[in-house]
Amino acid sequence: MVDLKLQVPATDKVEVDAETLAAIDRGIKDADEGRTVSIDEVRKMIPKWISKFESRKPR
Image (tube, rainbow, N blue to C red):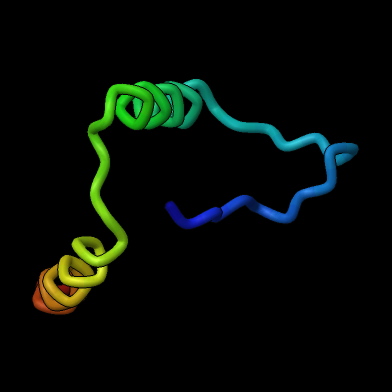
C-alpha cells in the first residue's frame, strides 16, 4: 500500500463540508472492507480518465 498522507500540520484547522466528509467516510469503510484497487490497476485507469475528460465538449 502506498502512503499518501497529506503534509498538513496537526495544528492547522481544515474545514470540510458534510458531503466531503461523507465521501471520506465511505472511502475509509470501503478500504476497511477490502474494496480497494492496487496502484498498478490505478495506473492503467488514469489514461482512460484523462482521455474521457479531454474528449468532453466545452459547454
